[in-house]
Amino acid sequence: MDVRFVNPFLEATVEVIQTMAFIEPVAGKPFLKGDNVAQGDISGIIGITGSTTGSVALSFSESCIVKIVSNMLGEEITSLNGEIKDAVGELTNMVSGGARRRLEQEGFNLKAAIPTVVYGKSHCIAHVLGGPSIIIPFKTDYGSFVADVCLGG
Amino acid sequence: MDRNMKFLVVDDFGTMRKVIRNLLKQLGYENIVEAEDGAMALKTLKSQHLDFIICDWNMPNMSGYELLKEVKSDNSLKDIPFLMVTAEALQENVVEAVKAGVDGYIVKPFTAKVLSEKIDKIFAN
Image (cartoon, rainbow over all chains, first blue to last red; front, side, top):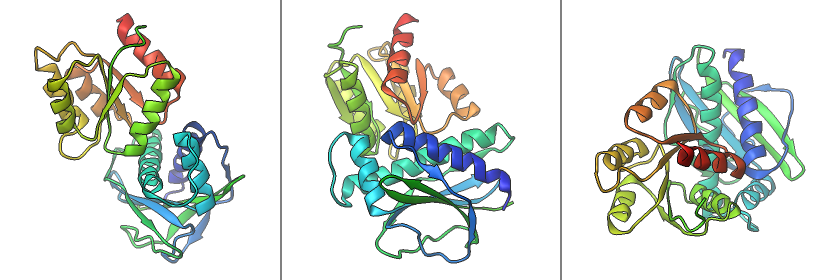
């Protein structure tokens, strides 16, 4: 995978979580992931087409996404409910949009599909290209989450 | 700015409608109705008076762009300010929206301050 894809997704993820949830995620060192098991308890996955093809997922631990969505909506949420599933889809959409906007400036022309949301312990992330993917890990005061990027080229 | 303005917030994601509603409330706007796609928005626009439309671009049934074209081609609706919300700002989409008569464009994620500036700019123009 082209390493130029990492920074746009990293920057877009930080921007979206900061702006929407007022939480500062700290990015760790990206690493290669060979299997399709999700790193979190709930994931949003979005397909990407255009200058390159593939998919990107955001995968959150339960404690982390509960706090993120509580902050987004200004109300306390205590467990994975319908609003959280909806919000994970929207956050995935926003991160994809932010990254594509950055990549457009580097000459890429990318379109995205409608995101889907999967949840449950050890659920699978079915990337369009099958893998391997690059994991960009993030830590917050409320738990961890990852951006799971699998793009060709 | 008239804080009694009636807003129509159109987005297929319920959480995003709630986020925008909360941002508008922070800005002092309390008069807000919602629709979850363009078709439902059009129905709402034809049944009640609204002062401002905040609409997502990418929605099933009728997209924000399709709704924009419907609104701007309808003499009874065309003067309602239309702020397009999107997760991206691809050049070709911006050009299409401007050609269709969009009054403003805002990229998600955004803060209450940015939303306020966009609303003010639309009325200033």
